[in-house]
Image (cartoon, rainbow, N blue to C red; front, side, top):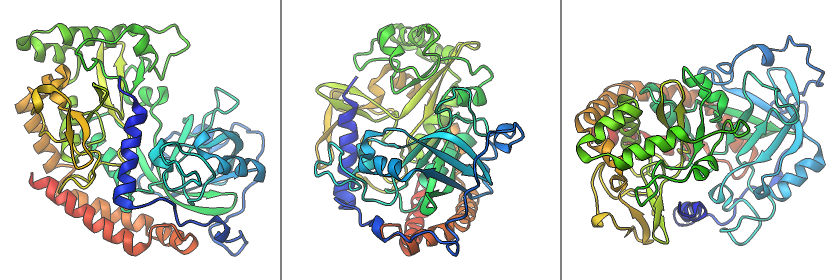
Length: 467
């Protein structure tokens, strides 16, 4: 597989070229001191040993991902632990703290910052953006909360982890939520996402995107048999068209790691695809996958130009592979499912190649440069046509099914009536929180900039419907 760090560095170039950001303007010294008059700093209940009657022990995760609510979450850390993670966010080291939600507190939980190089660019004091280091300078950084911090059985509304994405590179504050909504509405297993207010030690940090963790709980929620293997960012086939070794698949496993797992299913799938004759390839795919589901995945992905996802084959040293995806293998049905991940660069290339790093050159199913890596964009970044991968090329051969799912997407979830109403509803849901952040933090997106970004976002969606 290619060096994924090189991919992250390419993503960072986007921030440097398009945003011109080398240091955030946030100044934490200007954050207001919490007071009883400040509505952003509600009092934190005293944590107690759970009685078993708590809502977070008895209610399900649909409470957290209720699309009709803008929830507030509070994190409480000791000053020394907050200083510890603020002094080196890129270390992604957990510290102990408390999580408060709806008047109930769960403790201890693990708290850390999260993200690749792109998540930290311009937000740390270190001068080398390619190797993030130094202390935190931006108000918001993406965060991960580990509920089962010291108790493997601990759950919070059935969840083991919470992920708060900062949305620092998305002024519209809509990409995560709408992108995952589209996939799910089209029948593709994908994380749920909502907006959320986050308070840290009594101070309102801002508006985040709360995105569901893809883990064993996710697979059990989304599949009839959710006990199978979940893999992160390993494609079934190498760039040379051959399966990986058993060990290479296992190294990317995110569930069942301690249960003496095998990679028989995904490796069997890869072998069947690799050995299939061209005239048999569609039948092999139909045997191992739900064709309507994967065609829906492709229809959404290509329509919203999720160009930093599973169909962008970045190349490094002659080796090429995609990233930002998961695979799940259902052990009962013996079928595999592709799951989307990391939509922060989706939508932006719909009208034109606005991003110098991510644009996929080829239309769906087309091949360039005789399947050899080629340079694209003014940065000369290397990519390979995704249809050169035998599996992706096989998907592209389902032309009628793809056209049908794409049209269903345009007439359904992407239709003007549905999307405009949804965005308007979400805008009003997060307007006060956006205004509140602007008032408190100098590096927060302003309401004017946010509204302008929403206008651009709607234009991008209108353009997608016409193509």
